[in-house]
Length: 232
Ligand code: C5P
Image 1: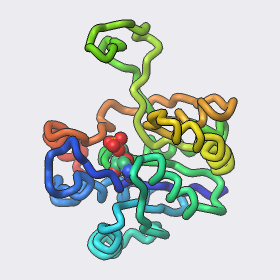
Image 2 (image 1 turned 180 degrees about the vertical axis):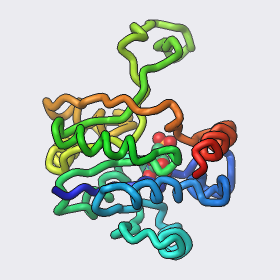
Image 3 (image 1 turned 90 degrees about the vertical axis):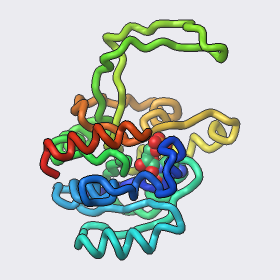
Image 4 (image 1 turned 90 degrees about the horizontal axis):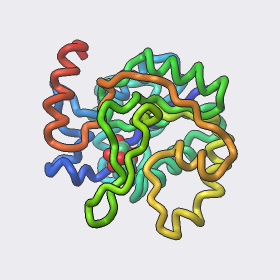
C-alpha cells in the first residue's frame, strides 16, 4: 500500500501580522515548513507533495527541497484560495496512492510517532485525525458574543493534523462537497468533509499537546521552546 503525505503551506498567514508568510518564517535556523517535511522524509511514508503559494513554488523547490535533499518530495505545486482547495490540488497530484496524510505545514512539532499512529489507524479505519482532548471549557457564542451553549468538555477534542484518509474515500467526499462549499458553508478541515458528505466515521487518535499550529505571533515563542526541547 502506498502512503502519500500532503504538506500544506499555501496559506496567507494573515493572523501572523508578518510580511513573510508564516510557513517560511525562520524558527531555530529553518523555515517553519522545513520541520514538517523533515518529519515525513524520515518517516515510513512513500512520498510527499508540498502545496504552496504560486509565487513560492520555485523558492520551496530550490531553497528547501533541493537544499535539504528531501528526496521523498515528489511534487511542489500551487494551492488554492481556501485550505480545502489547496488540499484538492494535493489530492489531484497524489492520484494513484492508497492513503493520504494531510498535514498543516504550520505544525512543526509533528514527529514519527504520530505519523506511524496515523498510518496504522487509517489502514484500519479509512479516516482518522490526530487530536487531543480539550483542556479549557468551550462555549458556543452568538454573533453578539453571548454564550449560548456549553458543550460537555469530556467529549470535546481539539483536532490537529495529520488527518488521514483512504484516497478513494476522500475523493468521494470532495465530490459531494462542492455544492455545499459554494453555498457559503465554512470548511476548516478534511475530516469535516468526510463526516458531512459520506456516512463514514472518522476515528480520533490521541496525539500530543505540543503539536501546535503556529498561527499568531505568540505561537512562535511556544514553538521555539518546544523545538529546542525536542532538539529539532
Ligand atoms: O489557515 P489555517 O491556519 O487553518 O491553515 C492551516 C494550514 O493550511 C497552513 O499550513 C496553511 O499554510 C495551509 N493553507 C493552505 N492553503 C490555504 C489556506 C491554508 O495550504 N488556502
